[in-house]
Length: 484
Length: 94
Image (cartoon, rainbow over all chains, first blue to last red; front, side):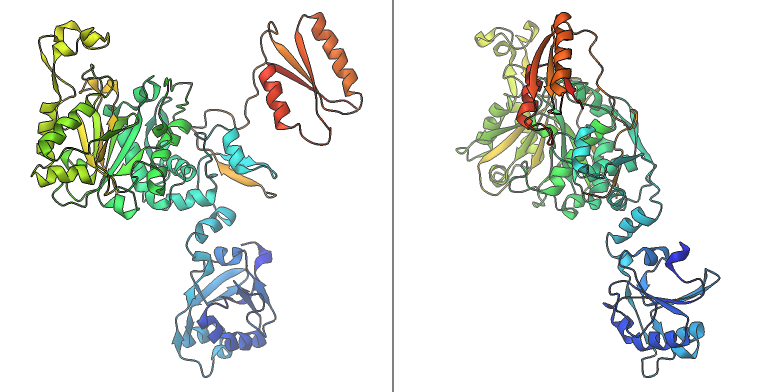
């Protein structure tokens, strides 16, 4: 504590006018001032308490922070510049023990608890650490000039995806780190393409920039861990000329807890958690891994989902087996599934009324993934909306039945698909001519069925995968449990 | 914004804090150089001399001028310079 902030000897009381207990003990503070020496540190009003000669207005809360005040009033005795003892709230016996008879407070109740200090209000503590304490962050500091806009400084340093980012100040980073119990210096993994070590602190910095709230941190960390699973082949996905990028699907209580959207416009804009969690992953790859478009990212066209592509599954129907459970996660657990997704392809069917009709129709739509004459050139995600799902449910079909029937409906005679067939050069090699060919790999990897979307609309969505998925043992969608 | 802001580096910190300057071109062959007069007194004389040197060396140039030396160049002018040239000399004089 700098010497100029507080007296070296005597009593110090930290108080605020907004605290009824502080107001209650105002006569005691006046009495102690007469007995002197006393200094009152007032957090919210330089004229409170009245009748006290030394009121130190602590609007910046530096004194309160350095004294580690959690509640007011707090009475502290100093001797030779050092704290000797303190008491919190109003307790006559304690105050008299510390301050003598002048603290008797005749007519007051014997005891009354205090109020929370302004220095520990939500978010305030981190701001005060950033300003007056040691934030303990290891990432290097970047000073932005007095007259420069921090947001523009982020653009100039190449830290953004083309949209503005939230400038990563210590205060914001500390708040973000408060969203996880994991230590800031824990290494989450090596981020391609540069295989740079990524600490929890770097994740937090990029999550701040993406616009995340601290409570998203466990999900962001889970997403990153899934992305770094060697089976996901993030490096290859990053440098491909294909459209695909990471598609994030969240299951379980975590999605609800942070308010993710699985309903109306689930694949669109407007939900902070959906938007920023997917973006945080992309910023980590860009900033920590060095995966820059036009450099290692060689996408011919890319897709808008490479800004962010993240949504939650609708788990409101207890009859529906969630995607994460289908992929081996225990029911009731939160999980992330990462898929190599290209853009959203809308699928319209307003005529099918039976599961049999709809599954054949969906298979026609799914056959278009990549190219109608290519098979095993990437898998797919099928986002079933409520109205389409109702047709299956009313017909008594559950997830497993839909998957089985869809897999059968996605078989084609090779003769229709080989090079030159149907007067189209693209297709399969001639060796497939006499075979029956599957469009995708076996379930559940071939088509990841997930429920989402608004109540109205006989539509579903098809999200094509990445040809890198063709060797199942080398590259697949990855599902991981999210640690709290 | 009149107080200094401190940010934390979101990258792997494999490059210097100060941004690297663009590497000068290895040759001026086939390039056009913008000669930008910022409007200070005798700036035009300096630009004239530079223009003469470039001409002798066979390098194409284009002349531009700021409307006033007291304000930054208009965005449209900077975009025009970037679109029509590969290099620029912004001339100061006094």
